[in-house]
Amino acid sequence: MQILIAHESAAERGRISNRLSRHPGVSIPRAVPDLTQTYDFAEHQQPDCVILSGGLAAHPEFELLASLLSLLGIGCIVLAPGPAARNLPATVLLLRPDGLDNDLINTIADARSRCKQRAPSEQPAPRARQFGPERLILIGASTGGVDALLQIIGHFGEDCPPTLVVQHTGGSFAQSLIRLLNGATGATVLSATHGARLAPGHIYMAPDDRRHLQLAPGRTPQIVLSNDPPITGHRPSVDALFFSALPHAPNVAAAILTGMGRDGAEGIKALRSAGARTAGQDEATSVVYGMPRVAKQLGGVEKQFPIQKIGPALLRASEVRTHV
Image (cartoon, rainbow, N blue to C red; front, side, top):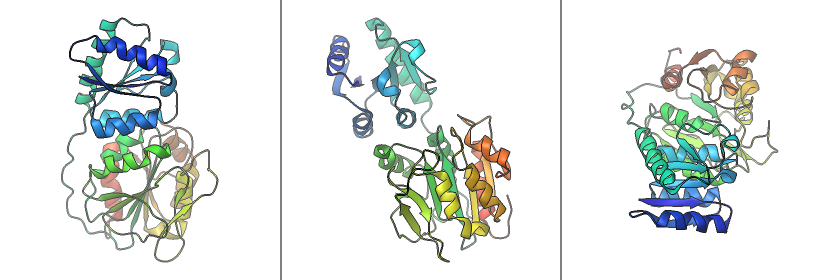
């Protein structure tokens, strides 16, 4: 059983390694000091479990890291006292740092089992559709968005309308997220490049957290990567994408997914007013019903759906002479 240890303190990394190494069948291939190295190693080496400090789990990027580990089938344990644990994702187990060695081993086994049960299932093959030649799909998501995006893009095929996605994430995880999503859809998920023309069957994502993902206003949509300041605290921002698409609104189908705050709410309202078809994730399937709630309250959401129905709804809205 291979265990990756992540802790800010070199002394604590050594102490945890020594504790675990005493158990037969346990190996510690590496101990790292930050979240970036944690995911880089986990993605490429596929350990059975990752054990992190409570300090690293307090970083905003941890939510995305936990989702990625879960989807890769890698267990995740946070060492922290109960009151310091925050609201950990459902796939993450908590253990007090002073827990007994047997408790730690048992928790590792539980974490592995929990993630294996949550490994992503295969989506049905996308059915053939005829889409309008100028149709675009726009999606914005934050907390809980990785699982939500996987459920949506599993319905997309190599002929889907050009799709642009803003998922709030730390820049160091953006490329790993793109690779993960690309393996879960019949479309091609790729890092957006400035000036690129949009093509059917492609899903474009912001390459990092230094630039906004936007559309140029010309008749033929092109990608713009802007280093303008963050909007509502985010870069890339969902609002930045949605507002940039206003010149193309009659050809847009847009969705706002699970997430904290209000990023995207004003933008999807403006899109709907300009003729776009819009959808929001419902409260029951949202990890955090923040962004969709505000968007609905402002009148930007034409209809709410459970997450499993949003992908088909966006594709229906993009078909020739059809409606959501």
